[in-house]
Length: 58
Image (cartoon, one colour):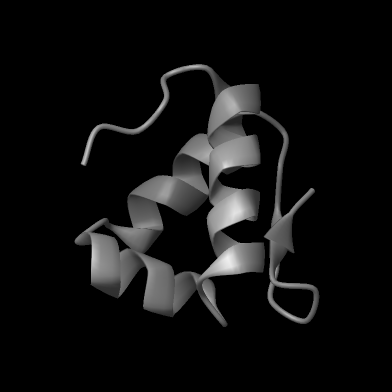
C-alpha cells in the first residue's frame, strides 16, 4: 500500500482508518502489511505521537 508522503495527509489517513476500521495501530499495520515502527518514526519526525487510549495520532 502506498501511503501519503505529506505528514499531515498521512496523519489524516491513519486517523481515518483507525477511527473507521481498526481498534489499534497494531491491527491496522498487520492488516495493511505496514511496519508499525516505520509509521511511528515517520509520524514522530513530523511532531505527532500515537495515543493508544484514544487510538489516534496527535
